[in-house]
Length: 202
Image (cartoon, rainbow, N blue to C red; front, side):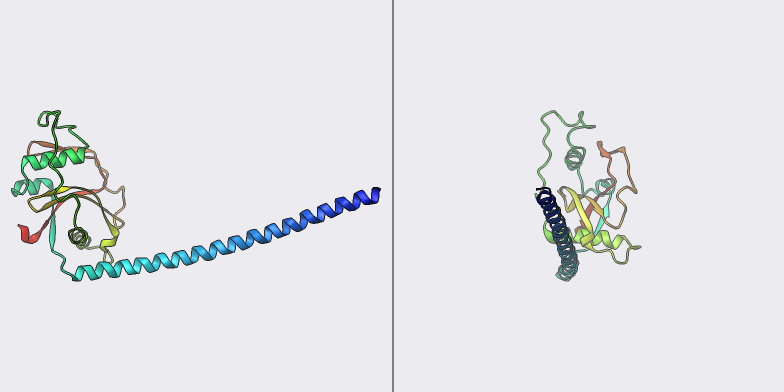
């Protein structure tokens, strides 16, 4: 009886050991499969990035329009923005009436964004201008630029907030109010808020 009992324990231990070996082998197979899958995914990502760059290049050849960036003050001084335009931009940028309660009533509504969204060619043109301004970045491409926010177009000027992979996110953190045309704008971003305008729209 004792021998039978010891034999049973040995059998159980052997089974556990074999299961452990099989589990380890199965786990290793899964790890190998995941590594292979990850490698294939990285290759696909690289391929998509190359295709994306080619697409941007093709779109560039289709007739990008040259543009320039201006500060809100410059655009206002040039007569491209009215105080009403500035109020709308401030409302969108400040997240409401904050800082401008005296000139915006409680029922104030900003002008609707027109166009509601930026068309692809204008978006690419804005990004291309941004890249051209990064003279130190020879490899800067529009695909590395993001339009974080869009506040509407006013007399050919597109009010946008930009960021890119080419400039560190926290290099230019600011927190200040600026008064332009009697309207307070709260600059709290580390991104690039600007007005972009087609050169031929001057």
